[in-house]
Image (tube, rainbow, N blue to C red; front, side, top):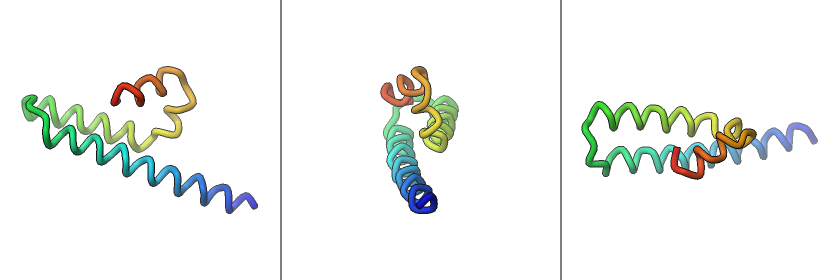
Length: 69
């Protein structure tokens, strides 16, 4: 039973990571900002996409996810 829950959690995490990473990459590709600023923002957004389940556990994390990182 615990392995089934871990598998479900893993699948949800992977799907969320892919969705957030695609959103960050799309913003990176179509942004009109300078390249160094854009790259730094993209890196920060990918880091947030990687740890998004942890960000859901705090109010600040939820706010950051809702505002687009």
